[in-house]
Amino acid sequence: MKIIVTGGAGFIGSTVMDHLRAVGYDPVAVDDLRGGRRANLDASYRLYETDIVDGDLAAIFDAERPDVVVHHAAQVSAAISVRDPVLDARVNLIGTLRLLQESVRASVRHFVFASTGGAIYGDTDVVPCDESHPARPISPYATHKLAAEYHLAAFERLFGLRWTALRYANVYGPRQDPHGESGVVAIFAGAMLEGRRPTIFGDGLQGRDYIYVDDVAAANVLALQSEALGKFNIGTGVVTTTREIYDHLRAALGFAGEPNYRPERPSDVRRIALDATRAETALGWRPRIAIDEGLRRTVEWFRERHASAARASS
Ligand SMILES: NC(=O)c1ccc[n+]([C@@H]2O[C@H](COP(=O)([O-])OP(=O)(O)OC[C@H]3O[C@@H](n4cnc5c(N)ncnc54)[C@H](O)[C@@H]3O)[C@@H](O)[C@H]2O)c1
Image (spheres, rainbow, N blue to C red):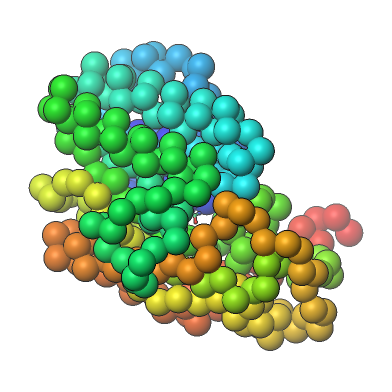
């Protein structure tokens, strides 16, 4: 099966590429490398270094004739989307629409979309919440991800497109960018290893549902193999506070410092966790990696990366 993975050189997309190849599929990446890295991909993978907003997607679809599109390319930060909602719309709406058009033209069998359960529900009435909970986005990023889901549903009605939206919780793990504006595990680990004090926005008691990247990649494989379509939460249902993540990483990395506290950001959800019962029932998916084990693997990866960078510069 030929699969185009947009954002395939990024943190989650590159892990999805590896999982797809491991089960015998033929994934090819489309990524303009504004956030991703070629080094995230094994040298044997093909990568189209192309912007989904204004690149020649038709040429890629004609050359590859994909059966499936797994769409991860995105402007990924809620905070950036507040500062620049037009940029966010360009990538997350226009880029997605262009891929949907090409997918219809190329008779793609299944379109899998990386959505966000961590952001689209906003502050929820119940924790954990399932897919029937109203979406009340509090950032342009979340609004555009939700709008993209509506476009998927409209393309199904108009053209019969088969689609799945995986609404991820907060994803963490190896290859996450430590210098981005989202992804506290990577940002904290990166800062601590460089001897810098990490910043916590707010009091640190905000709660998130942390899901390990291999569990997320496994959900993508199951989704594209399944006849079940629609929206699925992909999370653990467990709330962990930012301060707990900080303390865990501090102990694991032997970091002595306290965080810098800065004012809470208006686009940050206060407390969220996702009920993934639907994914378990319909896709046979459930999280396998508990947070202690996931953080252990992540710390090990960041420590090794830091050590090899130090060796290279000495
Ligand atoms: N990390 C999370 O916690 C999380 C949670 C929910 C949803 N998601 C979604 O998962 C997907 C992957 O996110 P990630 O955390 O791996 O971030 P990432 O930044 O590592 O991956 C995004 C990739 O998209 C590429 N990209 C961005 N704009 C592009 C463009 N215009 N054209 C081509 N490529 C472009 C980047 O170079 C990068 O490789 C995104 O759609 C994101 O919204 C992530």
